[in-house]
Length: 83
Image (tube, rainbow, N blue to C red; front, top):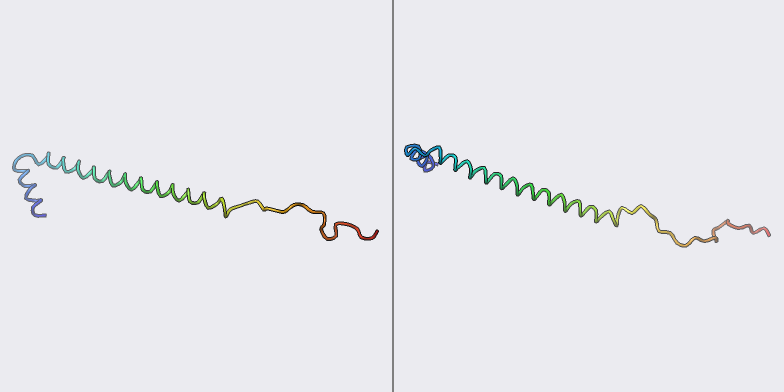
């Protein structure tokens, strides 16, 4: 920390403090933008994978149809045994 203050003091004495601060600002903002971009890409990739996983899971578990056998007329009480 003391070294940083000493370097800033030397830059101020040399008359290039504004230039040093501008360069530092560009470096810090570039790093922040890079981190924010990586976080956004990671979040979108995670969301994509979760939705893909949910779509794959609903194909097997969320079925709305019922498979039935062949229709038959031999159900109890379907015909009259009186004759």
